Image: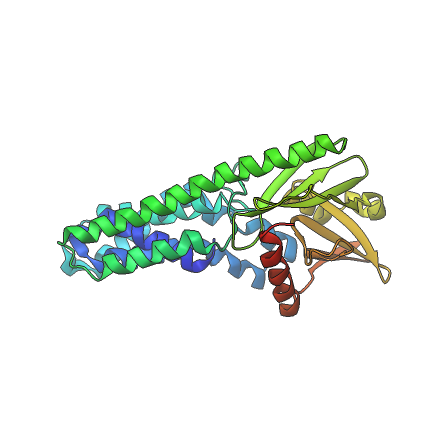
Length: 333
């Protein structure tokens, strides 16, 4: 999830663990704990593109990381906050839950997380977008209300608990909505007589009313959108896999690692003599049926037997256009 959401969650968890003892400092250190796992994004400055992608939401988002570093951070805080008269074990418990709930929440997003690192298992329930105002805003408001109360005020605990309950309830609701959307995509495929081997569904940005499905067929991937306000039949757009365009590059280590990252959901396109590896999990940059560019696309360049992978930049104008299209599409076809 986005940084603000993780800060809010971490602060609320910190409050639940130590708020009665240290007041707003529990929220402060909880917020810090909720931020720490995402420092793995710094890897982009010293690692190649593929390695940085692999490291993102890897080690720092694992149970192992939470267990290993929570005592270290807890001990450091106990030294900084000697006047609080709180044992380092209590600070460690706060840090553990702040660190651990971060990847648990991330597991519900499209990118997912390697919660059980070093085992090669990525959890991605794909039921909530990385930024969802309906999850974050009520949570934030209730956290601020709790923050404004004294640590001994019963309303402080009630506000915080309500924020945790509402956000958790909404997260559970997204799983139910995902199941309902998945069923509608299945029904549409059956009604249209489309043979397929797999379906991958996810919410579109900032909402859980409009959903996208990737469908694996023999020679192409189909992409479709469904809104709970739709009245017309779901339309599927085909994108040729073109995996054969990779040629000998298909055996390259970096390319194979990219394939593993996408879970096999990728297409290859060729423009101006260059090959592009398109990650289908995040869809095209437009709802236009003729759109051929994707949100996450990587240029593959071979030079002297080595392959360079370069992530294509995202244009702000494309994002604004897509958001306008999604807003209109969300209200039905």
